[in-house]
Image 1 (cartoon, helix red, strand yellow):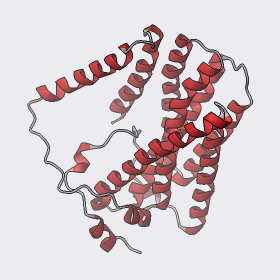
Image 2 (cartoon, one colour):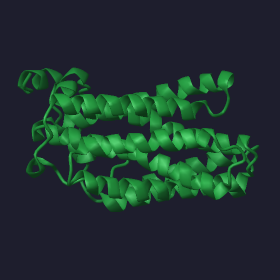
Image 3 (tube, helix red, strand yellow):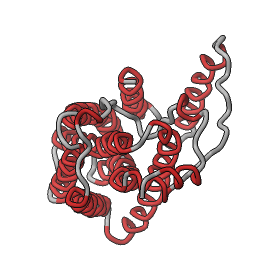
Image 4 (cartoon, one colour):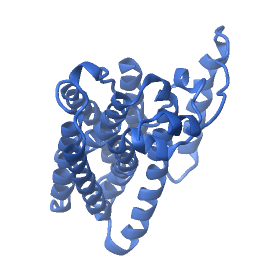
Length: 286
């Protein structure tokens, strides 16, 4: 899984880096994306392995997942918007502040290393202490670095790369550690529906929050997303702190080992036989 995540993150960066050599006034950019998508199908089509069984059901069970882990579910609702805002609006901000197309490509590329450099140590730390503390740390990082960015006009490119890279890494940490925390709370038979529901929550947030921020940008300027991200991270940190007062942490011996995770990737082995939401509702302790 770690190899997959590293490859995934670096390829995102490389995809952004090649814009330095692309004429964005032509359709060549989307055409290159389609080419890589088609090439990705080739190894799948050439495999000799049998196709996995289709899912018996597709279950999105928000009420049941809330009962299992409110912190995990709300974390994914926050992480979707936080991740997509920094990844999507950072290049727009760089362009608005006068950086060249080549500089923006370099920014997108090096930001991904920040995702690795921040998520890996925080994830390892979450195996040793209450994961909710790590989630609060990630939120504090986002608030601090987002507010710093709002105060820096004419920011140096390398400083901007460092700030956005750490911010992006903290956002991805909420996804990975929030998912791990939810899995710690759940019994193995709930993992499938838990994963599907939380991925749906992330996706909905990744669509709705950046869209709403885009509307705000037309009225409040290109730094709007920084304030929105700060507010989301601050509210989530308060929610996690509240839940820490209401519920004991998962014992260390019951915690699963942390894995770096990519928010957009579903886990095929988990999708074969999900429980129905009614089954989860009947079995999860109230």
